[in-house]
Length: 181
Image (cartoon, rainbow, N blue to C red; front, side):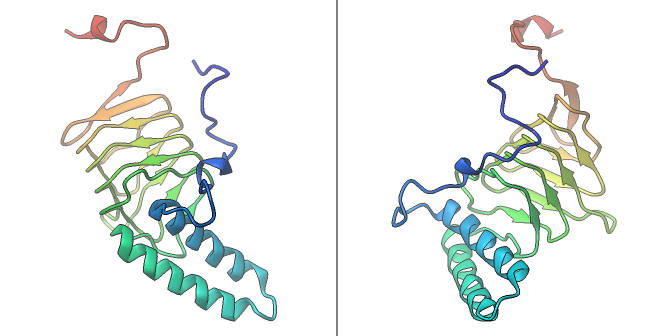
């Protein structure tokens, strides 16, 4: 099903998180950069690490306010995350996000019955979607806008609706209108 132009679900594309210029106004990428800086300093354990960690925390607080996103410093986000409009994004600290994911505004990755979700690689989450509970979203999945996902999704599937209906993704080259009944 995947082809050579497909985004990888296993290798992070760090260029997706890179700002066009150091001084460019890009709140979403600046928020991610503050998360990455904090996580680097936690792992560094150098002489100046405590000071640099505090600076990263202040940067994170600033960009969290600017973006309106609630993404904890200690969450597990692999590289290549894109958030074109991070306003209202809420991610539980224990949720896991795979490489090269795309998360739009007002998305919640949260707890249900004491458990949190895990997103695979190259998962696209539409605006206003809720992914809740101890579920696993497979690689290359798409979650539609305002969907409420409460069950596991196999790789290459699509979730739409409340509660979400999970269907296989149309194969490349198929006519999207031909499978409607």
